[in-house]
Image 1: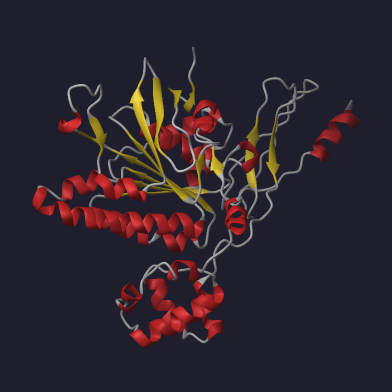
Image 2: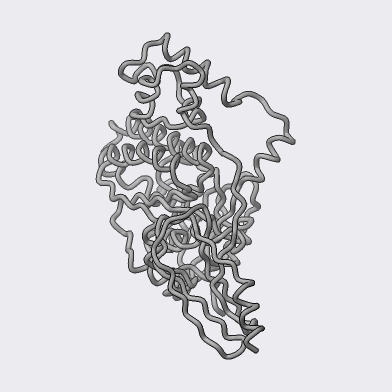
Length: 391
């Protein structure tokens, strides 16, 4: 009996997640009616992942660390320009402007780059030529594009039915928008994703950190604790791996996005959550006289978000409000449409419509997606976050 127990202990390999800090972990072995608690002190190591692997059918339950193969570098650091003959001072100016990768540099127009203090047109031309030698932003074959898509990670929503509707979950390098009335489950899904993103990829997680921009003041850390406990994760470690900011104006919101590049170039983030994208624009711009200016500023912010998603291969989940549609007609059962107009509609990759169901049930419908068929899924809001609906 003791030799079998020791064999199990040797078989379980403990490895750390990409967290800076791990407070404690518990290993429970119940196969032979034994219970063992192991406390792991705080220390640093990366890029491994702690996860709670639960099985109702198996007699042995354990918290196991899974070693994740390190991905190839998704981006080239801006420092590599120095090796191409670019002055270190000019590289520092790019970093101060929120440009931390050569990939991100190539996503800016020369007009924007010359707007950076201290960079002349001649310097910008030289910098762009150097960046082109490091990263390839030209044509590729369809086979190469398919191979590149293999780096896309799909993060579970916590509901199998919802995951199936989305082809596996919320995908990286894309913007997923959820719109609907208040209390339709948009923010609850955002909280659930804060936790599931930190699960290992073998458990349909993202194995990374979370960035959360809150424009409506609805983020609740205590909900994160409840959801983390559902997945068997340490709530303290989960909260430590969420960076949160409360935005009060659209300008503040835009500046928060600019500061994300520095963090994502240094740490393994896998999702950016914006709840909601349109709220501050509806407050800061009023009337039809400011509509054109509002839409232009919104388009610039969405462009920045798209670049973040593709530059760092992170998922973007953002919520959106709805507005009444007087032109919908009397024969339309629900005369509401998402706010933001065509600018927002063209910028997002996947649009999801949320509506209330009976009790705590909610209905999600694929409103628009390039690779998903139309369909609906019913999920439920539980104390542990989004889950499958119960009959």
